[in-house]
Length: 204
Image (cartoon, rainbow, N blue to C red):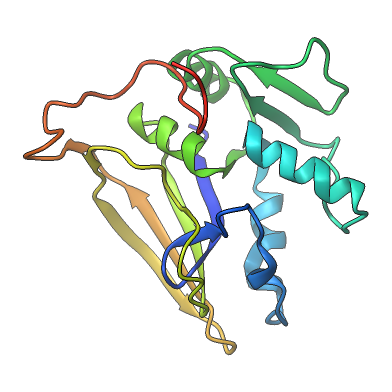
């Protein structure tokens, strides 16, 4: 079955971006092989985007940043409570409930699926047990504050380490598989997985 994989870089203190979404701390010399991104990209044919992450990509495109354009050779699904009336290919907006969407996507023949994020979308898929793996590239930089890898939830998520690789520049690549989620004991211990998509800033 196709896997949904979070493939992302984090700071050493667990953030994926500064509070304003800036990722300037990622602008650093890269190791030979680009940390395996090319090999990973060949293993996927679908990318899942949160609306804020999509908007950041659009801004990068306006700035002419290399590699920011949406690849027409892969499926690009954008999750949003308020999608535009029309969207130009190669993107498609999604308002469908996550369990039904993930079930339909996994049943469609194809390669693995890249969960691009951000934090809210990752958390929403975790709520529904729809994340299979995390491949994290930990950058040896502390940024002090920012957007966490996963939006706050009352769940503990046990992981199984599949591999660990250290690069000469200090970057560490951690590959985890997600095990069964457990409600956190104590405050919030009765919390259950949410049955609808939740994105940061979305109205209830």
